[in-house]
Image (cartoon, rainbow, N blue to C red; front, side, top):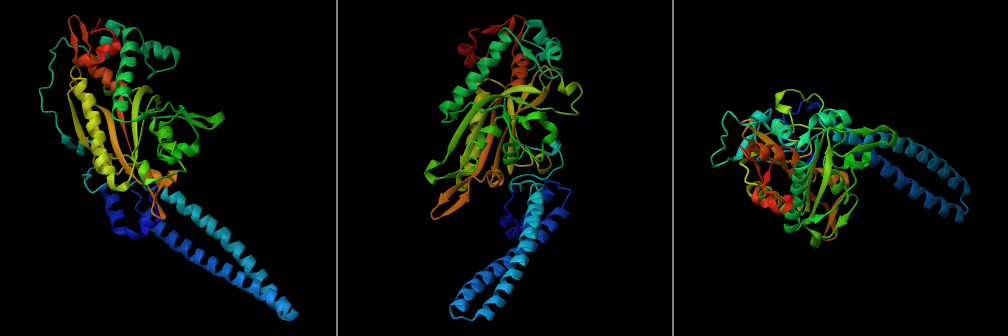
Length: 423
């Protein structure tokens, strides 16, 4: 959520940024300024009333001491009138403040100046292209869903039986490959200085609201109505909330956290060939990296995190490219996002496997996550990235590494899997 002070000082920048995002409710901006003006005026009036009440209360005591009872009683009546007026004003101020906050929750983050204009993923900018040769497998190549049946790697139909579509069951060497990737990603994060945490998979409304999943993504999350809890769509949500309502010291930066969790997304309205197999599922495993950083260093940190994810792709020997998301494809909470896409040779298409984002103060304003800067406190910056999401990584590994003898396991994973060939 943007700070109201930022709104007052950056009206032109906010309007320009929302236009880059193709934001359709620009009237909300004018309404925010209108309500803020009303709120500030009401607060000033209330402060004056409270000041007058305090002054009169002191004078009443002086009048009684001077035995000026009649004047004191008149002042008491005036205090009573001010008290009633103040109560009415406090209620109006509470309503205006609540209405203002509700509107602020509807405004997305303002994009970084480097974010290109655009309306959809078609307008995303290739930040780093793949410079090598893309693998060509020939007409006999199988997509990963057929490879899964051939080598009994995972079973989509069994998942339908147990739960429903979009819940694959990994088995045998497929399960070991899944576990190998999780351990590899966690080990790499630990070597990069991230502290591992194992967070809950269910969160309350305050937690989901603090990182921006609510009120933006209700339709994508599974909701447990009886307990008023949400299944997490990403480990970003519980991990970042560890520091909700926290004041850090400057020497605490950077805070670096990583965690593995299953992730749950409804993905309503996703149909067609492009979502077959593991391309889009409702439950998938992911290792997340999160950083809390000083505002002056967050963009250096963003590129450091991009480099970390790049190293994972290179060690897995997968062809990949990096996109800078345009305004129309940028997530609600993000100021700048880089997407990683891996090339799927059998499908002959690019699959998104990671997003690395800087949220600046958008999340920390909701989180009330600050740091001490001399005598004052300031909002910290938050960043996170998938490092990595497993489903599509496995899809690409299976397709790109298929041979007549079986599926070759990248060398970096062989100590984790215990085998070199999945067959």
